[in-house]
Image 1 (cartoon, one colour):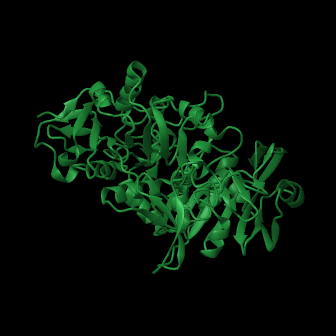
Image 2 (tube, rainbow, N blue to C red; image 1 turned 90 degrees about the horizontal axis):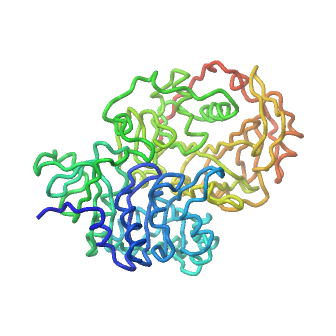
Image 3 (tube, rainbow, N blue to C red; image 1 turned 90 degrees about the vertical axis):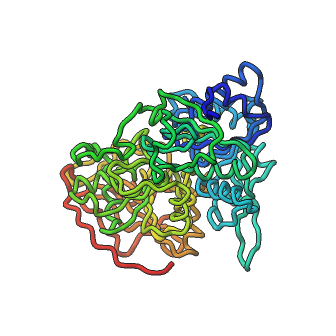
Length: 532
């Protein structure tokens, strides 16, 4: 019996009140044809109604043009639990899912991506849920927002604090999906799935297991179908016994802006000359200074934003390969890509499934994390997940909370103020016009990383900006370096809402950071470490 069905038939399988798990990652791997068919069915029939959507990483692109916005209709969607959400520039319309969140017409939660994958694994194994230290002291903690994004969500908690073995833990009960909608490249006639054109493996296997083990169904969207028995067993990522239905979409996009690029899926390796250096400017200065925190042999995580350009800095300095980059979507090594392909790496050493990559992150197995910040408060806590009257301009936490929970070293990068006019060159920085918004603030709107817990855990934390470097030392924010051309009092201390201490051995940032030519970067060798 063929498993191949039309998108409209797949949409008809979703019942009122179903919990639907969607495998996607921002611009990558979205089963858009099936989601579009569900939205179109609702427009025709008024069904299915009152769905709960689970999405460990954002379903669809950052602008809300595809993905979850197909389901973002009042009456269709009742609740959504997502690691991240569409986000985009303020010049574009607000994504439909954000209109529902802001209007409180859907109960919306931002749950750290790794925890959401863990919730699927526990549902698959029929365990009660996730007991974790990840998220303690952050917005995920029920002592703060408990992951709730609006009043409807706050009235229906998804996390609580439990005492176990003498410690406090966050407990996230497992959520059992009745439908898993996943995506692959190829299905054979029996429904075995391979991912050869995909930029990441993501968590389709775990999501399929969670649905199938609990009596649910699994719908796979693929680009093509092949004869039974022609797929290599080692290439099959989701076997046929976990797949109920297959939807064919020959026009399936590799990313929401890319039809197909074999470098994204690791099918070809590109010459290093293909990767353009980061354009000159203050962002490059910050990325360069962040690179100084690296050691040869490090395994380093990268977040979206300024930090994503650090690999280009190392390439320009002739140090490509000295550091192994590890990305939450699963890539290990190679050259992390930018834009809509962020989350993939060209020339990667390996592509791990996201759930296993998050186990690596949550346990702190890597050496250093290079991430961004929107706000830093007086405790050194960081907000990267919610800001101001337009929260749709941020995507939520994604894997940030999982990554920072037990990271040994964290480098947060960002501008000292928002909107400043800056000139860099000749070995110095000139602040032409000060920024309109301060980013070192008395109280962060959201706590995505807890500086208080970071201190308890002995984490080494620094904040790299274009005009100074600040470290978290004994619970205080201490300025340790200042850019040439910058006045300490006027341009740094007076531009922070919170008191900043000044190190006794305050030193200038290296003038080479502020010169356009390569700076002659040399990385010390990381020492061998053992234990936790």
